[in-house]
Length: 277
Image (cartoon, rainbow, N blue to C red):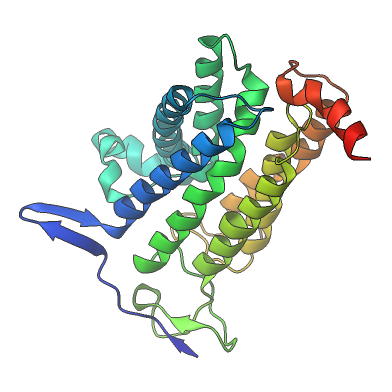
C-alpha cells in the first residue's frame, strides 16, 4: 500500500495573497494550452492567428467557469443551493461539474463563431477540443493534492489512505482520471487532428472518448456523498457521460458525411488523403 503524500494545498504565498495548487495548476494549464494552440493554429489546415486563439481562450474560460458552476448546482447539490442561494456565487469553496463546463464551452464557441468570419462553429470546436485534456489532467492532479474526489475502498497494491477518506485504503481515482482524461485523451486527439479531418470529427471523438473514460473511472471513484448512487450501481458522473457515449459516434458519422459547415479542414481532407495514399 502506498502512503498518501501530505502536500500543502497552498502552492505559495506572497504577503496576504495565497495561491492554492488548484488555482495555480489551472493557470498553468491555461498558459500551456494557449501556447500549444497558437503553435497548432499556424498549420495550413487550421489558420488561426495568435489574437484569435487568445480571444477564443477567453470565451472558453468564461464558458467553462459559468457552465461548470451551473452544472454542479443543478446536477449535484440543487437542494443545498436552493436553501442558500447566495452560496451559488462562492466558487472559491469548490463545486464544479465537467459536464456543465463542457456545455458552457460549447456555448462559448458558438458565440465566438457567430462573431468570426473565418471560423465556423464546428471547426472551432474541433480546434479547441484537443487542448481541453490539458486542463482536465492538471485539474485531476490538483484534486489529488487537495485530498478530494478519491476512489472507493480497495486493497490493490497501489491503494492508499486518503486523510479525508477515513482509515481504509482507497483507489487513487484522480490519478486514473489524469492518465485517461488527461494524458491518453490528449495524445489520441492530438494525433488524430494532426491531419485534416471533416468538420465535427475531432469534436465528436472528444465527446465519445471522454464519455467512455469517465464512465469507466467512475466505477473506481467514491460517489458524491450528497448523492450516492443515482440509478442502481451508476453515479451521477456516469449518468451524465452516457449521452456523450451515444452522441459522440453520431457526430463523427455526420462529420464524415459532410453534414456540418465546410471548413479548410474538411475541404483539405480528401486531397490530403489522396496525396498520402
